[in-house]
Each structure stands twice: as structure tokens, then as C-alpha cells.
Image (tube, rainbow, N blue to C red):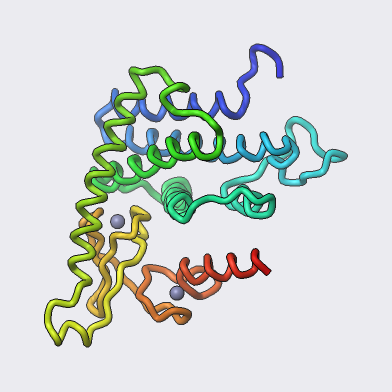
Length: 254
Ligand SMILES: [Zn+2]
Ligand SMILES: [Zn+2]
């Protein structure tokens, strides 16, 4: 790399800084969109950085030294995660859920539309920044504090702290909603599921529908044919994400 070039990691930290700058400096709602997209871009680059450290060739779609040039097409979120699995980089359940929620949100914004919503934007931002902090420590041997200017680090810390507080409160409230209170309650199966909007497991589900205590919104739900639990969406294998994750684990262990 030449001295005036920015590698994946520097590029990732720069996108994060731009995202936070937008979020802090501009109060109009489209600024949230730019903040969120820049932070997602940062996450994608950080995932690639982890692969790059394993072997630079792994970030290219055709991972073959004979065909790769510097401008060859590189991989996206999904392929990064597949390659993580195949080379034994294990993301925790929390990390996987966060990445999936962020990916869905980004696809919705970039290929569909952006619907500004103060609560949802703050949730998705909090989840993204929490993920970045953890990913740096767990997979890239560094701390966000050491990589970004302190004028930007402290606001990030504040956003993550307030997200974590809201998350704790929302989890308690959702758990309370699915705990049967009367005998009749026992006849109505209830469970917690991952919210399709914010990606946290704070959606209280019952026959009547799903309610996320984090987003404070209602969602349509259906039954997973695999485990019978309520879920907001069945994936392309026709089951809930927990069932698919368990299946992947079984395949990996065979
Ligand atoms: Zn939610
Ligand atoms: Zn299931």
C-alpha cells in the first residue's frame, strides 16, 4: 500500500466518523439516513478487514490469486459471513443477529425507501455502534477509543449507553408481556421473537400479533413450522432464523 492510500480499516473508521458527524451536526431527518448508511458501510469494511487479515484474497468474489486484480469485485455482507464460517471465525449469536438486522435495514433504505422515525433510527444506530465497538475488541484486537478522535468517541459512547439502557428496559417489559398471569393466559402460547425492525429480541408475540417494546410498534407474525414459535418472518428455508441457525450449527459440527 502506498503512503497516501487508505486501507480497509482506515476507510472503515473514516466512514464511521462521517456517519457520526452527520448525526451530530445536522438535525434534519435525511441526515439520519446518511448517518446510518455511512455506519453500515463502515461495518461492511470492518468485516472485510477481518477476512483480509486472514488472507487478502478472501475479500474478492473470485478468491483465486490467478484472477484477482486490485480492482476485482469484492464481496458483500452475506458472503463475508459465509467465509467467516468456512474459515472458523465465530460470531456470537448477538453479533449475527445485529449484522442481520443491519443488513435488512440497509437493503430497505438503499433499494426501497427511508422512512424517518426518531425511535427506530436511534435504535438502529445504537445497535450498529455497539456492534462496531464489540467487533473491534473481539475480532480486530483494538478498541474504538484508540482508533477515533475523542470528540467523536464520546458521543458514540453516549449513543451506545442510552441504547443499552433502553434495551434493558424493553427486554424486561417484553418478558413481562409474555409471562402468563392467569390460567386463561396459559392457553394462549406466547414467546419473544426478534423484531424485524430493530433486530433485538424484544418482540412480545401472542395470537393477537407481535409488539416490539423497543420500537414501540406492532408487527404481523406467523408460526414457524420448525419450532412452532411465532416469528416476524420465515427465511428462504421457510423457517425462523433460530431454526436455520441451529441447522447451520449441526451441519458445521458434522
Ligand atoms: Zn423493534
Ligand atoms: Zn423455528
